[in-house]
Image (tube, rainbow, N blue to C red; front, side):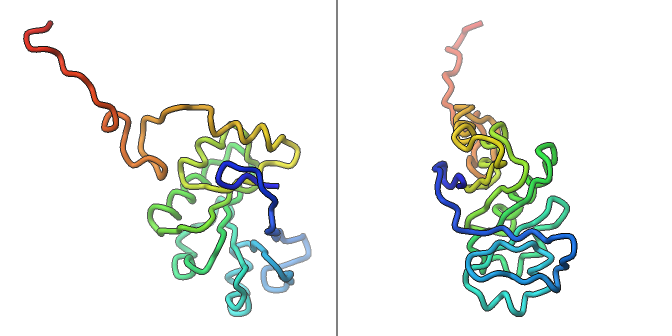
Length: 174
């Protein structure tokens, strides 16, 4: 199960993670909807680009610009958070949406927690695979932790002061 568009849904994608003995060049990518590591996509691009249902995931130390020529072909791009305190995935998501114009499903995977949901969606994530040892129902509640945002991001293009009409001081008021 994952959270997609703030709803718990069945996950019909498989995330491929390389085992110790596997390399990007020799790993076999199963049939069906598979999200492969960026290195696998780069190593097996010729064969994988023939498949319609293929996604790619980036590690927090990889650059989204490496996908710029292929970005439109992916129905899903995932960003892996190796630990909850690694915030580089936020920048990757923002860059995928704002600079590279990615409009498909953007999924957060790895060590993501309820406390991050609100902020992850602000930078463009619309799908989330919370840690399996945590409650997905509880993670869903993270989207409503705050009722208003001050600064701009992917989800809100205007800062609060531009969205709020203020009454001016009457003439002569101290």
